[in-house]
Amino acid sequence: MKEIMDPMPAGEATEKDNFANRKLIRPTLARTENHGNHAPGNHGPAPVQVHMGDRRERMERMERTDRIDRHDRSDRPERSMGMGGGGGKKPAPPEQTNAESFYYQKQMQTRTPMVIVLRDGEEVHGVIEWYDRNCIKVNRESGGPNLMIYKPAIKYMYKEGENQR
Image (cartoon, rainbow, N blue to C red):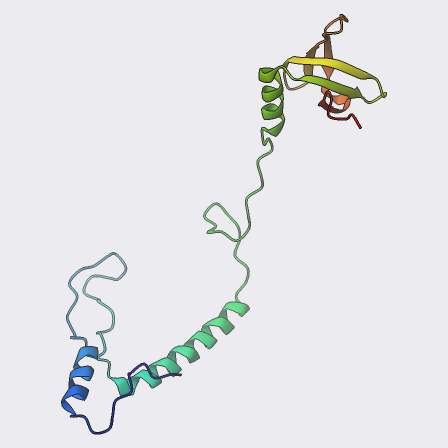
């Protein structure tokens, strides 16, 4: 432990020492407020006057109680993660991230020509007109009929011109 006091030459007056110690004395005042933590009339232990000589003892006592507390915590059973659980386990991520919806919306607004590759290898070229949970509607600009494609039938899709090498 390092001492916090500034080094002083040995020949200085002791009046400064007394003044430094007076700063550390805290008056013992009776507390009248009750924050619901204690029974009425019980205000806990009285505040302790602190001197520089007591500091090392207090630090050693705090370290001992900290070690004891850590030891006690390891013996305790695990807390249940009920409704009032205060943390610990992360909540499950949301089922829907809306990334798919965001992608479709962007492609619809900019009328981006897309290539949709189906599971059987067939490619469909066109612009996405609308989508829902189960399918997308593709307007084909090459003169073919507009198509409604079930999402499970789609292998992958990309912007037309992106896959050119």
